[in-house]
Amino acid sequence: MRSDGATDSGNIPKHIGIIMDGNGRWASKRLLPRSAGHRAGVKNITKIVSAAFDSGVDCVTLYAFSTENAFRPEQEVNSLVDLIRKQLKPMTRELIEKGARVIFSGDLSYFPNDVCEIIKEIATENADGWGQIVNIALNYSGRTEIVRAAALAAESGNVTAESLERNLYTNGLPELDMIIRTGGEKRLSNFLLYQAAYSELFFTDTLWPDFGKSELFDMLAEFNHRQRKFGKV
Image (cartoon, rainbow, N blue to C red; front, side):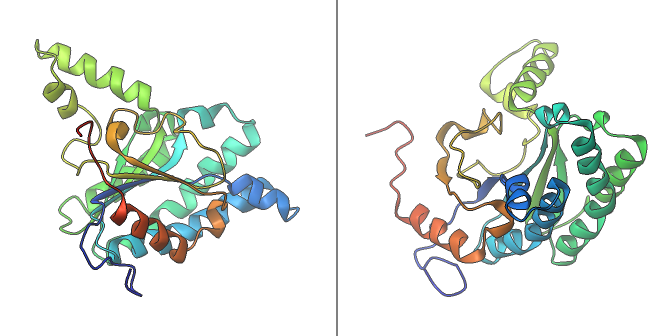
């Protein structure tokens, strides 16, 4: 691994999914409200995504808000939605200025109209982006995505792996090579279930606001040395 995070052999994952877990616990350890942890987590996004891109990764999918998050206490949900309202545009603008294209996955109709307008504006502004891709999963459920894709494929009268994949939110994105989950839990929690079939999984006890570039580079170095068989010998 070079000091810039790139591997010498060039065996870099094209697409990384990140489950950004541990914001609430990060705040609780500091006797702060959980909302403070979510704000700290947002501040970490640009740093980690930029480091991934500098290492040669083409696409990063961020698990920002799951459908299950909507069942948290109302105050926390409102805080999360307000954080999206206030921070999504500044955070994505910084990434867009670095040459990234920002897209979204999930049932965005859940959010208030003003938040939907912000998401639409961001997606429209950089629709012709030429660079690496940041895919932000908002009100996302892997199971729901599969059901939705299967229903759309059935409408075409021909349900195959190819027709289903064409109707996934990730259609057109690189294969998902790697999933990182921070915060100590070791499960996918309904994240990119179809896409994760042969992804390499990485788990760390580090809480998301504390997850740094050096730990990311260590994971990329380990990915570089893993032998991926895809079910073959």
